[in-house]
Amino acid sequence: MDIDILKVSERLKLDESDIKKAFERKIISFDEYDNKKYLLFKKKLRHIERGTVLFLNNNMDIVMGYPKIRRAMMLYPTLKNYFIDKIVVEEKLDGYNVRIAKIDNGVVAITRGGRICPFTTKKALRFLNTNILDDFPDLMLCGEMIGLNNPYVPHYYPEVDNVLIEKKDKNNKIIENLGFYIFDVRHRETNKPLSITEKDEILEKYGLPYVKPIGVFDKENVEHIKKIILKLNEEKREGIVLKDPDMLINPIKYTTHYTQCNDLSVAFRYVYDLGIDFMFSRLVREGYQSFEFNEDEKEMGERAKNIGKSILYPMVDTIKNISKGEFITEDFEIYLDSEEDLNEFLAYLKKLHIAYTIKEKQKLENGMHKVKIGRMYNSTNDKIKSHLDGNLW
Ligand code: ATP
Image (tube, rainbow, N blue to C red; front, top):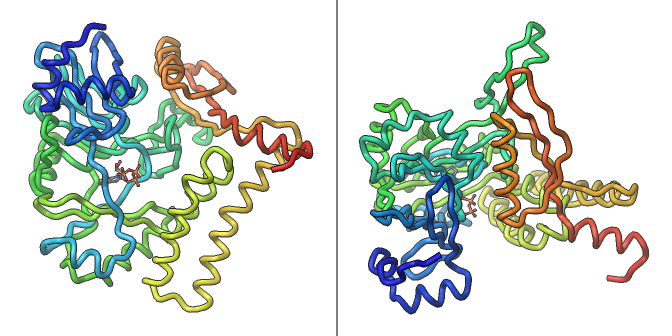
């Protein structure tokens, strides 16, 4: 593929030498989807965010990467120091980040890492009326794809049940748990966000689903925000993203005890693949949260027990299963419209070097395909098997 480095450099305001080096170090890759050829940034390069996409079309359209959201370890004094005046509190949904844009008359859904995902693109087109992008082609819709039936972050949300097939016996209905909520509307070339009011107004006007604010608070009102966290924790929800009403400064995030434990339990189920990267950060968050919420002995004991269980139980479960000769995988079930869509998605996983195995496949009476795919974590399987066979650490 011949790429005009000079043009790319002018378009992105990057030095030609930086671009050449980035190609050599594989920070920039080439990919294509549906006859759309594009470059993607796998890491941040100067002012270009990770996940940025540059389309190799006549306009050389750009879709900037979604910016990193930093984390508050303490609500007080962080919020008071960080924000200008008011804070808009939005729920943080636990799914995967998607940017939706219209390029050359086609709508694409781009993942955080900068790939056009065929599964996500097709689902987004089903969930959203994209007229807004006809009227404002320079905008992108940034949102979270959530629900159990997705291939990346399977997590059940009661509000996104879609009935795919009705049955007389209600218990046999086929339900897909998947939905999309927009949380930011930004100019795709500059990443400049609309203010919260502008965002809500435009999304209401076009009838698009978005994350409704939980409330707007004075930046000093940390007590109220703590109450929100406790309530979300009870409801087993992920956390909050705090935003300036005019989006003049970058949002920040804060998560619940439930999420920290849930992350740990996933990490220790696939311990040699995910454990190290996940563990330290989650444990430290728990330390600050216990301190900030001023926990007594009993509350701290409860927290400690939950953390310990989240680590130990899934890990022992994995060891047990491997000891019985099982090969453990992280399974997800997805619904696709056709066999071609399935093959296209599997080819996409291969391209991303994601190791998987098909565990079940079923054609439904409405022509859709239900597929159970197991993601393979080889280090976890191999290392545990080796220790169970008596090999030393
Ligand atoms: P990073 O720290 O680089 O932002 P991460 O993968 O560590 O990425 P998370 O800890 O999951 O990210 O938190 C940031 C992500 O939260 C965002 O990228 C976005 O996908 C998601 N998110 C969910 N709800 C919201 C919301 N209401 N506003 C903004 N982002 C949200």
